[in-house]
Length: 358
Image (cartoon, rainbow, N blue to C red; front, top):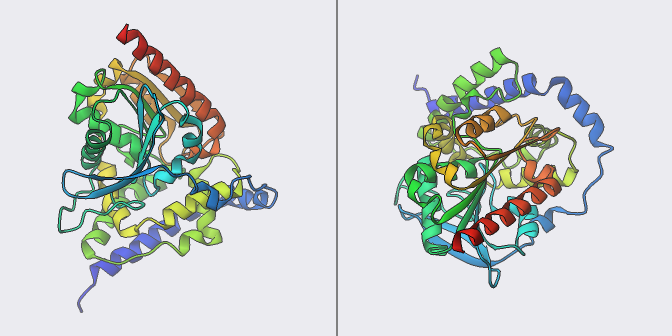
């Protein structure tokens, strides 16, 4: 009997998800469900999260992939801030930071390859979904949209990995053109060491299986969809569990789930093995030449604080902030405090630029 390994891999992925859910959620999920009924909705509804718009731009990456983005131009701006977003999200994930920073600098947002409106790496150009390629993509964005501008780079999760890949590829621009770097809920090493909030024995099994299952699905060409499931009550519960460390407004969970559900699952599984292989820890020295801010949530189940601490150990003098009762989407969950930190960070970088020019 012929075995369809793609379908087997797909079933394995679903089984793996069930195991993870049962182990990670448990009483925590039960408590969360009980508390959600008393959780107020925020003043920002789902449509509002997608309401901010700037000048639409397209960037051609080194392999021909088209990256779609927007530029919020500030006349007389001293610096340009480029903000790559995280895994399974899109440029709209920066909603709160966009509101807070657009009166301080010109802002550049773009959808990472295969996310949002940006095209995937098709066979017509390449099949590169590596973190290294994301660094090259970021370099293309800089070269085509902010060629001569003093730059601040702020990345969340996989967006931070994109910045660290650029550090490894082009260390010469850090301290020269790039004068500030903000890394939020990000890592310079493989996320394979994360427990995902699971008991240690189970997390080791799950983490060992994820890359192989993802590769099998990707190679098998299985057309899988998570768009419907991710918006079910169970899907929203898991999204909240892995996004937040507190009972954030219901709208926030719906927004994250909506971004995840709109991202092609087949592209996500192509990214996963590369995220697990990511390691730029030995290439962080250039960050000592720029103002550096590292932010994490104490309850981040995806990229735990220890991964941010590993960055800080390699970048003496960097500012390090850990938010209590906060998870991976700290940019949304604690947006007021994060925005206050980022505003002060941007002001310091501009002041440093002024001193350098004197």
